[in-house]
Amino acid sequence: MYSSKSAYDNQFVGSYCTFNANAIWKAKAEGKHRLFAWLLQVWNLVQNWTDGLISLPPSGIGIEEWWNLMINSTTSENRNKVAAILIYTAWNIWNERNRRIFQGSSQQPTAVLGFIKEEMEVRRQALDREQSSLFSKCFPLL
Image (cartoon, rainbow, N blue to C red; front, side, top):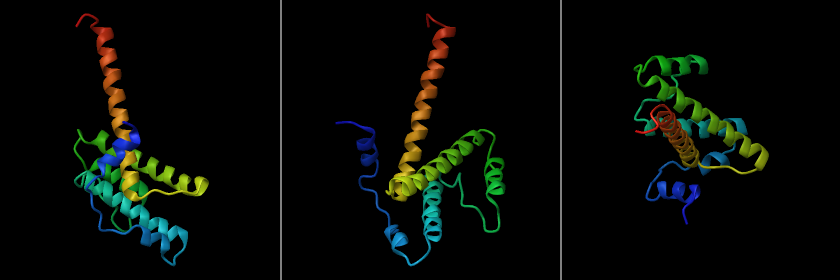
């Protein structure tokens, strides 16, 4: 049976990750420090997925400065893509934080990357339908 979950699970069949994220949660450190290590892995996965279009922030730089650097240091045709990736990544990290606090469950960084990809694909498909619908209204017989 096809579902979002089955499509998501199939996306990772055969993938291999050498990083043991479970070790983060068993570390003898405060939760905020463990979450930070987990966040780095999510952003590293995003960096790899985007072939470096998104990069990790350099040390000593604030979030706003890094965000602006990411958007302004790319080509004009990639700016919207970079902004979307940053937004969807931040949103899914926030959702993971809420899942951990309010639902008592957690996802691996690769799962969060899968959620990011899935949401971006849903948005792309919605835009395709929206543009297709707009086109048919403007040119009903074509």
